[in-house]
Length: 52
Image 1: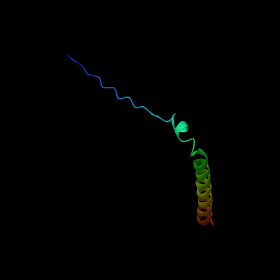
Image 2: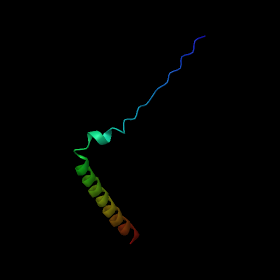
Image 3: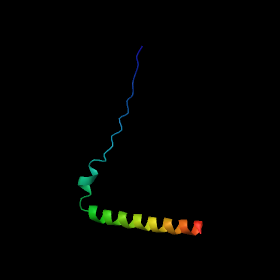
Image 4: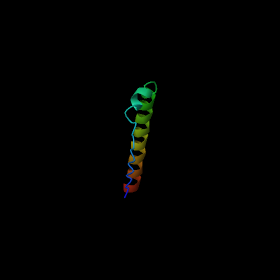
């Protein structure tokens, strides 16, 4: 009897993202911060509108 075991290895390459996006890191940081601020503002506005 022959048993075949298939092992699927999922390789996550999240560690090498920093080295590649070093040129865009500052812009991405600012964009993420801006989007987060906008989301916070919108969420607060929506919450106030729903509450009041």
